[in-house]
Length: 230
Image 1 (cartoon, rainbow, N blue to C red):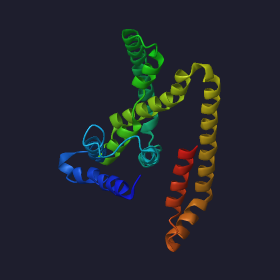
Image 2 (tube, one colour; image 1 turned 90 degrees about the vertical axis):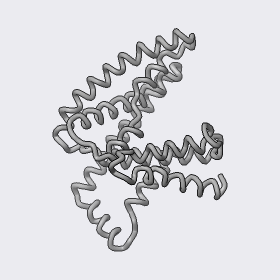
Image 3 (cartoon, rainbow, N blue to C red; image 1 turned 120 degrees about the vertical axis):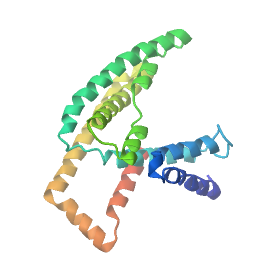
């Protein structure tokens, strides 16, 4: 990727905030970003080509960053979230049943034999779109919590199920990988919980703020790079 292309990508990133500048329009930031990609991508002027390998890296980094920022705004300590989990799980299951029927119907219609893949893709939700919209629009209330729970459950199930249905011959290895990732998440949560309870996180934040270390930014970028590389 050339420097001019990178500069264009950074400039197009401003399309989202500019389009969402007027609050009365109620346009999420991500809508402007998607429109910019459509106009300058293969469906538009064709200035930006998806074959450029740098875009895959930027996409992975952007996805991880968006999910981190959006997830950090989910009110996990709100007691209403617990009641919303039941409704969200029920909706995710109902959508999954409909998706399974639709997926196998499409596979039979077009004779592709990929009914399971279609079912997972239809059932999974796009948290990368939904959560930023909810956050940027400042939406709240019980319906929003239920939708957030549904999206989170559907996405989690989709991420776990997709490797299994893509290559059934290696389903066992994919299952072990999913369990390893889940176990790592539990260990990381326990570590972060201990850092918060012990006061270490607050002390590091204070020192970073006083001496301009930007530790949170450095740690966040290091984590994003690790996820992309792994």
